[in-house]
Length: 146
Image (tube, rainbow, N blue to C red; front, side, top):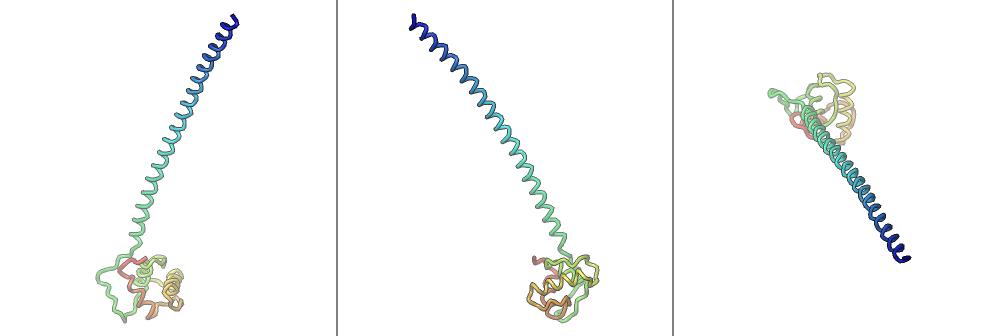
């Protein structure tokens, strides 16, 4: 009789442990599903960020193309000719320096851009476009170098 009671208790304990395992399994399944949902949400955010980066790169490329100042066909620069302010500004912009608005005036920002160009090219940085400065700078009049 004691043996039957003992056997009955073991059977009950076994059945209780099985039902507990089912609950544990369901909990794990719910946790796994929650993690899968989080991963899916993060992947969506990553795709959105990738699209945003692509759009920004395209915008940057467009802006950089707009920075190249077109040169009119009739503009001819002889090696010994003196440039006008607009030509200097266009060449500076194409060389990667910011002379400000291309307005044909040698303002403060244009002179600062000239000094920066001169310093980068081992010339005396005086902000004036002399023979040596123009000799190097005129190469940028028709092309974008930087």
